[in-house]
Length: 173
Image (cartoon, rainbow, N blue to C red; front, side, top):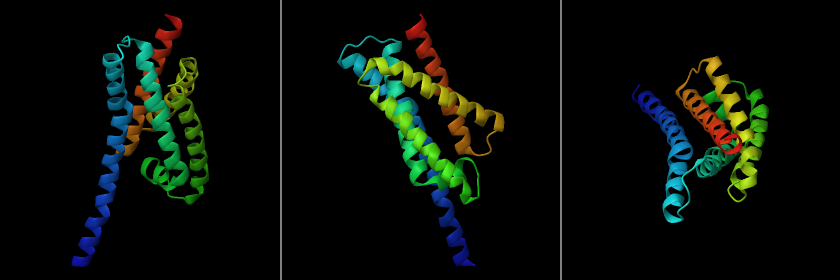
């Protein structure tokens, strides 16, 4: 019985650690790091604090780095997304999740490269924003059934709204 308790306790620790790691990485990449870069560029390079600067770093970090990292994770370890986010038990879903990973890598690369070319940002914002908006709505209508899915949904909808504001203020106003 004592061995069973040790095994059960040890088995639950990685789940909690993964849950908090997922939350921490999302907060860092979707809020803390972009804000840090915006403030740094504003203070160090005297860049104007406007939607162009905000978009630059919110496209680079959440659209670029987050999707690129998610794509690497999904294509190399589809089981995490299948089991921890979507609660899929079958390994048959791994092929589709790997392909989602390839799409995330592709969109992520566009977001990353947009940091060096201002004219690429609107396309990265449209593509990334559309992806995040559709993914967020899917989570919302499905009614999330795990903490990781709630984290993904909130992050997706947050970035979707930011991309709408960025595009609205830089292209149409």
